[in-house]
Image (cartoon, rainbow, N blue to C red; front, side, top):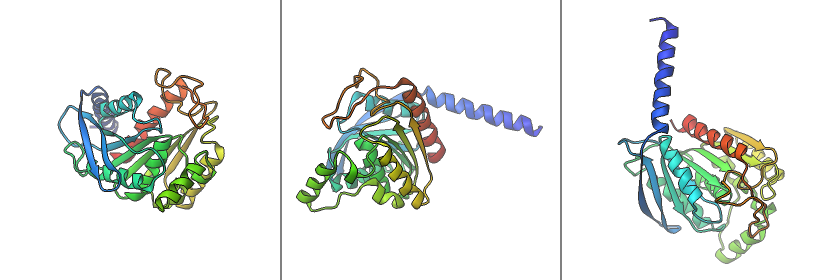
Length: 272
């Protein structure tokens, strides 16, 4: 057979597999993960109905807690062929939470849906920061991180005083993602709104510098005009809403669609 014919057949076969994954039936089950560091993490695991193991993805919610939008993201990733885990984790900057989320990565790799498979972490806002911190604790197992509008240097953020209070109360160091960038083993995708007033340009620039210094594989995509929580549809987060820290949020359909496609592509590239 001519070489061109073989390539065409292989490409067609890959397309069929991708389409099948995208339309796969999804199963879900409630989970309760006992961790030594952060107590019990309750959540749900979504995966394709078809039996077999596939890469795992841990999805980390915003400071607003686990919401319907997170369940939709998890289901969408399961339809794309991943075992997607969402958990409710303690809000805040305690170092113990990072350790507990790293234990959730360990748990995911013991489950029949994703046993011994590589793991990705997708985080949103506070969850994005936690995604990077947890990835740094499991550099061999976490092969991909997708960070949606995270806080990368707590000391120059809106949360600096909160972080200092946590340090004073617990006596433990609460690192920022920029401090542990060199320990991250997986490829990092940073997704950022150009008008985000919680994660402004200097935050992203510092993370970029830290990843460059560590020689890490990463990409940065900035969406002009987009603000914080740009991927959350209006029914989950009304446009113009302000968080308790005064952050302006709002849905951007163009940024939402493009960022989600980049998320799936990134996970496919680095987990398969």
